[in-house]
Length: 159
Image (cartoon, rainbow, N blue to C red; front, side, top):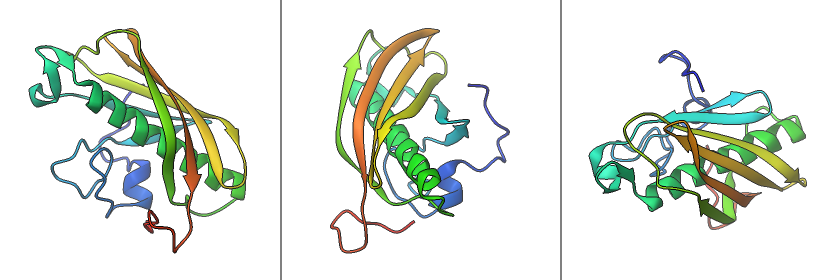
């Protein structure tokens, strides 16, 4: 993904500037601060690791890779459900389940590219497929189910 201009607000910055999520919360100074952008029917992100994100020299921790894929996928589901509902803002979505398949170690020397798309949906949930590419190679894939929750649900957090 070619990076949008730095002053272009991400999906999170537009709809959830106070979000403290470790992976994608703009308000979490110690988090990964993944910035996601709509790209047609898909959601994309580009992220750079630091040495403290590595499992061993030059390779990303699998937990960090999983967090990036989880956050990207949750926002993909939220944007998809927003469009499906013709809503002005995305619903609060939470992860019901997701599975990551690692194809090879994720190098940290350059940008880590992520791309996701909804592959199934109903009124309150979306199944999302996502890819993580680094060093010009597909390194991991993810498939998960993300559910829109309403006020009163223990995981509900208004944007």
